[in-house]
Image (cartoon, rainbow, N blue to C red; front, side):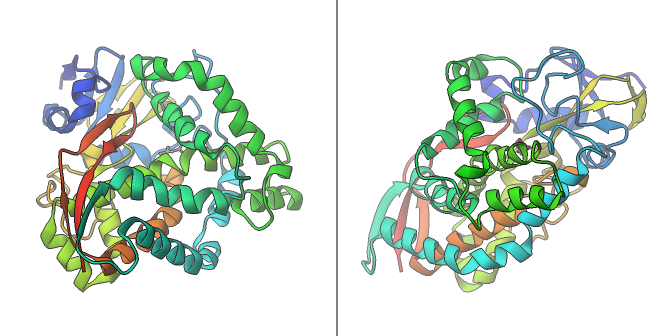
Length: 399
Ligand code: QZP
């Protein structure tokens, strides 16, 4: 079989505005498609995305999970001990973070985060009032809620928290090519990195938080004291923008699917399914790369040693070979098995945190809002990795 090749740019503004046509084209062209512009092998079908993500022996992360190949290029920051590492080096930091962000630890946060969501909902919607109002669901809810709960849970001091979103924004752009999106971030990289790195130190992190628990793991010898700040850095890199755009995705989904909102109001226990279905449907994290560690065959195609492959998570999550009616946002569906949180040994370590945030916020909103609809055009925010929103103007009718 000859390898289909395409010269499209997945990181062009056209595609970032609406990636779905490119996804369909890639899936239909074959199991593996060569992207001439970047000399990488694209996987866009569920079966092959899943296969590559669960095969860390043949597809390593230590050469970087963006376009840049660390075999040949110097990374923009010291590589992550989790994301950009393979077993065995990956395993101790991963075990520590999995434990710190695990269900057991999160049960302690649950009541506080539900109360925070109630407070935020009251502040945005006006306590006790009725009628209708309009606001931007991105700034007022999707950004406001994670910024209210997550930095406190990490144990960050109050100053400089406004740096978290711009740092994440650049980190996610930096997984793509050095295009205009990366270039516009460059002037602030040194300053933002210095701020983030300083906050990873032990004396910056309040007792009881995720950060202090990572340092406690270093005291126990589960990781070294040199590793601890980099594990904290993973929290600060991956923990904010992702949940902002995950929450934006589910709010957009409900604003455009009034029947599904009515169903959530009747059956509020569906909040968690709704969030996972929105992560499948929008895939806030769109692409991740791996590097072939040897000549390896996928879907009948040889991928040469050292070459980059790019997995299109958003495409796998709407592959009609895997999902019935993939473009529908549907609370009746079982979205489990989606690759929006990745798959395999690197699958999102913070997914329980993200789900808890979503459950708290949706529960508070479902109690108060009878109907939510778009009050104007929702605007995309272009990022090389994130499927993100700049603005989602909504009108809500209060219960
Ligand atoms: C970013 C890190 C969607 C993700 C890949 C997000 C992410 C995860 C980990 C790190 C950064 O460890 O720095």
